[in-house]
Image (tube, rainbow, N blue to C red; front, side):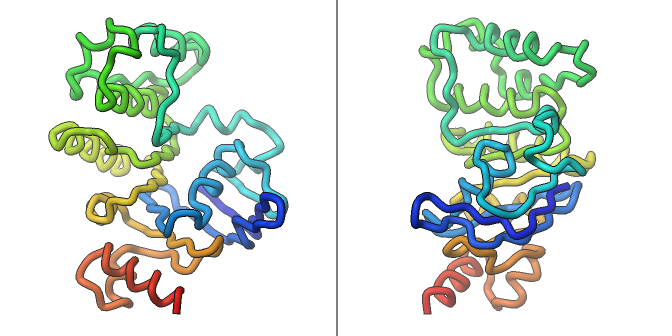
Length: 239
């Protein structure tokens, strides 16, 4: 689904990404992990076409990024902190997005399952500015899945959700993965990633230090869980 070759990005003299080579297979959940400032956000923004790399190529579902932005219509993105127009209601926001994308006329199936599962019905009539942070995060999740994308990029997806809503959302991710969709997750909650992720990509100082199945990482580091395995890699990299 995603193929990255020789990806480099600098901000002034600071090299954030240093020759990233990476493949993310379709129908899998891949977790991007690493210390703060190691390039996770820059990598995600590069895949979304929001950051222009200094060198290297990114291919998403056969489309080379930079040649045509149309590939983004097949991506669902859930940012860590959503920036919604505060004067609109949730229903107006969803209607605006559907109108911009052409709705069913755009040839994409509309997926509103999470509206019901999150019990958002009554909340959608309220202005976004009056919604709690958790409710806005639910709306954020609905928008990511709304157009039935092939690839979903979710940044800290359960932040702010109560345990019941978090369970609903994780069930949705796993069900859609089983249906063939591909996910890229970024989260600081290792127990959550261990529950969801098939593969892990560990970044350190702008380089990929590990990529492969979660189980293989835990086996090779001889650690009991993903959090301890990542801590092992971080201490090894700092040595």
